[in-house]
View 1 (cartoon, rainbow, N blue to C red):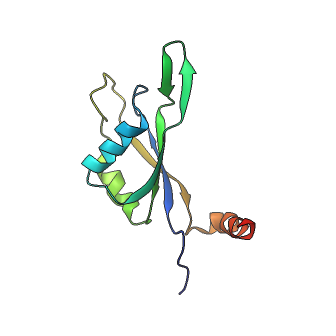
View 2: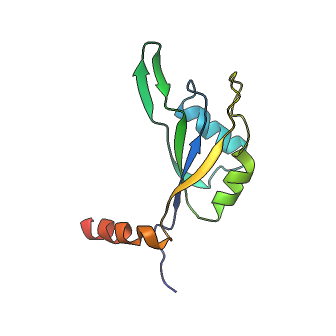
Length: 113
């Protein structure tokens, strides 16, 4: 076996309303029963005429690949918050450290440390 360290998964949560912040996304995750299952949330923003807004998506780093299914079942297809939008959340895995495609990246990172 072996393996050990890392082992997390980065998930993209798409179709969130542009006015929501990182704090909002964290609150939704916690309210959905996902508190403690993730260790990192990133909500990319852009500055526009009306001030800062997010780009319509967030990245969530889950500690374990098995949490993806739970995140998907709790958030996918739902509307986050009370924004007047018809958009429904889409959950996509963007990085799975256990998959063969990113094993090379992982090795490169370990060499750099």
